[in-house]
Length: 87
Image: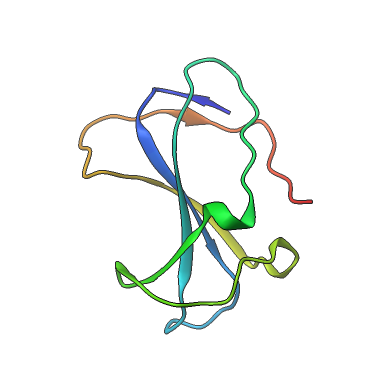
């Protein structure tokens, strides 16, 4: 990954339900190509922007993955992904 040095969140969902938690891990997009690694403990569960208690992340159960620009940043942004994988 490489980007613009701004704050982002990696967002994960583990089912198709609209009333279920989303898990997010914050990071800064590096300006030079780097490999970022996330552990289950890096993710906090939330529902409609509020922290909630939820089971620990299991990457094997992942249904959706997304990227969000965070910290109420406005304006242009740039982030590039070369590869996404889970172990």
